[in-house]
Image (cartoon, rainbow, N blue to C red; front, side, top):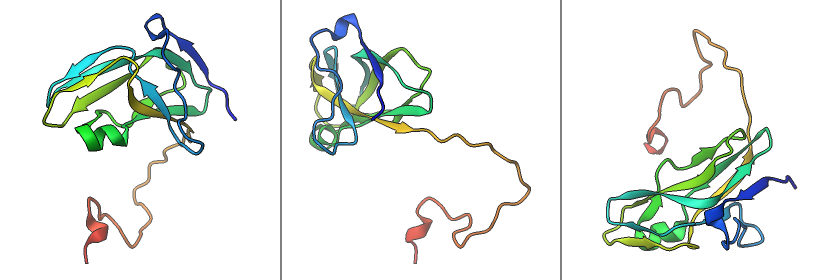
Amino acid sequence: MTEVAIRRLAHGEGLALPAYETEHAAGMDLRAAEDALLPPGERAMVATGFAIALPEGFEAQVRPRSGLAARHGVTLLNSPGTIDADYRGEIKVILINLGVEAFAVKRGDRIAQMVVAPVTRVVLKEEHELSSTSRGQGGFGSTGRS
């Protein structure tokens, strides 16, 4: 198991650190370190009260929580948000309310999830032609057409 250093910020005191909520969960739940009110159609950047130091070769992705999306229409902009291994600032979550009613975020609420994963870096090699495939240039729903 890979260890990731975490630093609790002053406004994160008393909050549970990100944690896996079930035995086989892929993501750790992130909690709000502040209150926020999201009217319909509005967004807010919500603090989590911590910063991390990912090891080289890893990234963290911030993703929506399905329950918030299904019940309230609340999801994340810039999803998944990428946290690079060299970032040391506070993890924040950009929530947006796509629902029809205002949504109140309370300090300590689970607002997103964070998945830590290895990163593969590549070297791009410019070519005049690419190899052909049966799909070719078909995209944006082309694989479902008869």
